[in-house]
Length: 107
Image (tube, rainbow, N blue to C red; front, side, top):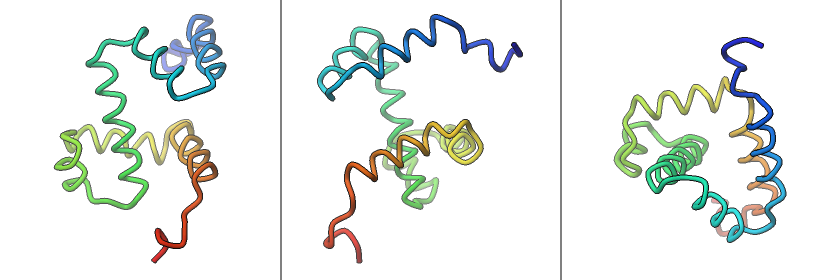
């Protein structure tokens, strides 16, 4: 296993297995709060907000102003969004499928 893949160990697999078994937002929220510090949760939520804004076509400077993320962080997130393992795109795809746009949102 390469150094880039070293994080894919049994402990990580078990963590992801536990995560996919959660059924509601409240369950996921409670699990993440027990697992992570408030700072870690803030950072992850900020990164996800950046992903959604990038996906919406927003400019980096505007995303930085809205989220407080540095343009360096936004650039790194954009790299993973476009050239990563596909996790961001899969999550965005699933959210779109669960929340299709309404007539009011399409203009």
